Image (cartoon, rainbow, N blue to C red; front, side):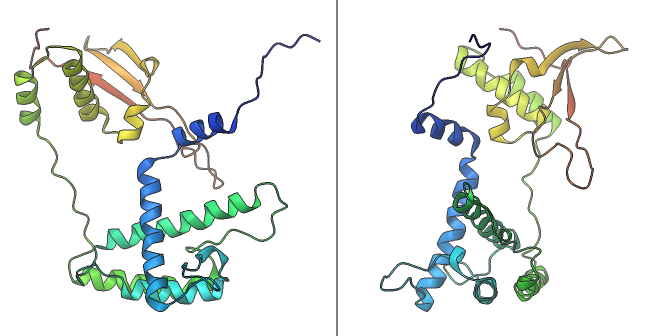
Amino acid sequence: MQVKRQFQKKTEEELQRTRNDFRSVNTDRSTNTSLKIWNDYCIGLGLFKPNTLEPIDMYNLNKVDLNLHLESLVSQLKKKNGGELQASSISTYVNGWQRYLKERYIKENFNKERKGDVVNLFYDGEFDSFRNQLKSKYNDLLKKGLAKIEHTKAITKKEYLEILKAYNCDGPINLLKLLILNLGIHLGLRGGTHNKLQVDQFKHKTDDCNWKYYEWVERTSKVRNSNPRGKIHNPRIIRIYENSEVSIIF
């Protein structure tokens, strides 16, 4: 029988490479940092696996015990030097714990009939006291001025134009850096998203006022597809207009 599509068996190494392409390095680093906090807590209290010096795995705890430990941990979270953490740091740790619990659940039950639901620190009733402790911690940090989000100062239009005028465009590497700079200014995407940009996402167009521009259309993903509540996230469309205030001679 003749088939229209040709399939080949993939090795585990090949599949692992494509999995790694999907994963964010920063996300993995954040999860590992969260688990290190948990392990430090366990070591400090002598919470080890039976007959070992290995910290207990939060995934193997029942919800009641996990709630008590996380509540105690959050109430004591501080920097290594004893100073207070920013609220954003604590939020990162909590998200890392939740991510780990979810990923472990999927890994353990991938080829099994799943029994029960994945642990959810944000919604499960068993974690009410943990969440209350978390809110109390945030409120305390807010009073101390440690719950504010400090944004990086944005580059001004004047600074941007000065960079373009003084830029050295000799060689392909400098041209590539200039391209990354311009896309970063106009699109404001995260580093990983910039890395996955494709040429066919940009279309050269002219508007009603005869201004030329490139139109960038975001690729839809599972994050921006319709969610269970029925809300649909339409792909972003951004126009990058030609710059009449500065000319660069190549």
